[in-house]
Image 1 (cartoon, rainbow, N blue to C red):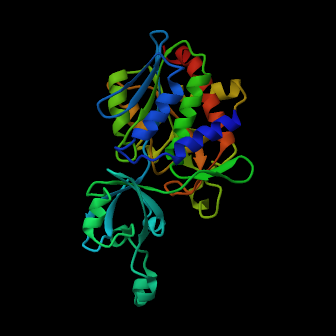
Image 2 (image 1 turned 90 degrees about the vertical axis):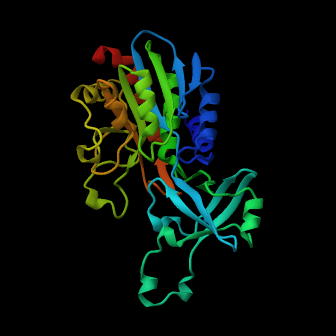
Image 3 (image 1 turned 120 degrees about the vertical axis):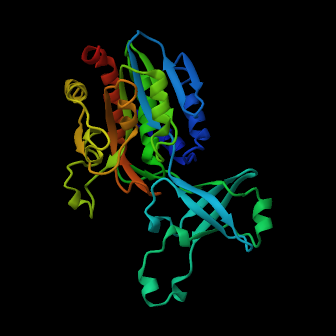
Length: 350
């Protein structure tokens, strides 16, 4: 399974799709699951919903497809491109990155630059450069040349980076938030022997407001749901102040609370279901209580009259950067936990 998972994750991570432009990831999910489900449909917002028919009990797995990126907002007369972020960026990470602009004539490559530090004065050099002061250079010399290349206002932009292996079972790449969760969802659906009707949903626009999860859960109205995502691994320099005991390689994380309770507070029954499943099948797991950040589960569990919802996450380093790092063992065990949990959900929630 390890090699298959790594291959699947690379395919997903290397694909491109900011919020609202998840088309390529949607096609990968459809191709991976078409032989394992009875129906695949795409809703009006762009969520891909893969349905495996079973009993009247309905189970939902949600994995958001979108990655953070940028979008073109202005092209100057010299051919330099100004842009705005889509999703949450730590500005200084963006500077110096190579990017892909997805124009209407195909991919165009560029680099993110700023005023050179050699020309900065005094205090100016000590300040972090903000995205509003950056630009993209695609090698053009005029606005007309940029337009002729198929780049215009509203062109989506992603980071140009590919997944590679690190030591042992660890990998690094872009968009592991949340292509790791997508891979986990796909693998879980392939493995589970649940008798329920399962809805595996690749959701859109999570990074900008949990939008896809909200509308898909409303339409499906499942009896129980699991959201897959990544969470912060607090095991590298600078994370000590988080006082969290979540580490890479120690198993997937089950969310107890996120966003200090403003997001999800998992019910006692959800936690009992997931923890007892992990313990029954000797799957390593960790518990997460997070002060910041939330997932699709926040939107799902508040849908209609309320849906019991849990979160299973892969611990990750350097989230919301082009060099996110995860351990494939956590991904494998997360998929296994979801697969087994789906098989046991009905006894907890019917």
